[in-house]
Image 1 (cartoon, rainbow, N blue to C red):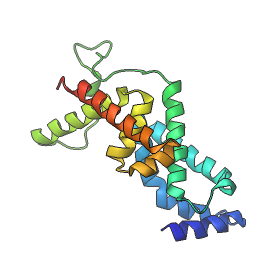
Image 2 (image 1 turned 120 degrees about the vertical axis):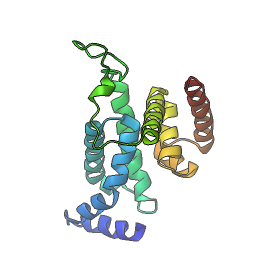
Image 3 (image 1 turned 180 degrees about the horizontal axis):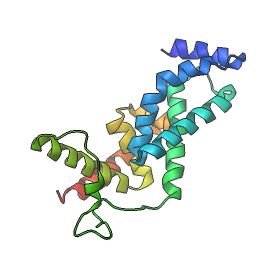
Image 4 (image 1 turned 180 degrees about the vertical axis):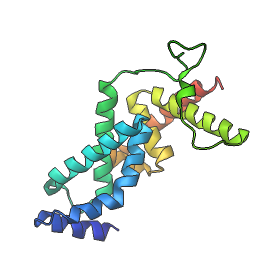
Length: 187
């Protein structure tokens, strides 16, 4: 796949703007998933993924083709996500009561496509709780936890994406895991 991507990059650099659409097609789903896992919001994840592609396109001339394009692209997206997280404050919490209702919380506003068996609902609630707890981690731990355990990237790839030494990545993963374990002990 790297050979195909490098070929498309060369075409883009020669002026073929349509070649970049092939690159977008290859990475759009994975990039969106990374953004969604970090931000927890569909619209923001779509916006950031789109912004990452725009920045990659604009700065394509600075990409070193000896490296993996996916790592470079994921790094752009991860940095954009971290910037967005730092700029915003929580708007609401799912446990918060909806104003004007008698005890309904934000969970009641989540749309369901179909009725699920009780076990599936419990699994979803657990995943939501874990995602929520991940979102509460400090930025420096959240990004490595998402990239390691949700996106299943190697330590080396995480090191390159976040532009930090491998030892720092290992330390942050360990500390992030410990922080997450403490947060989840309440379950």
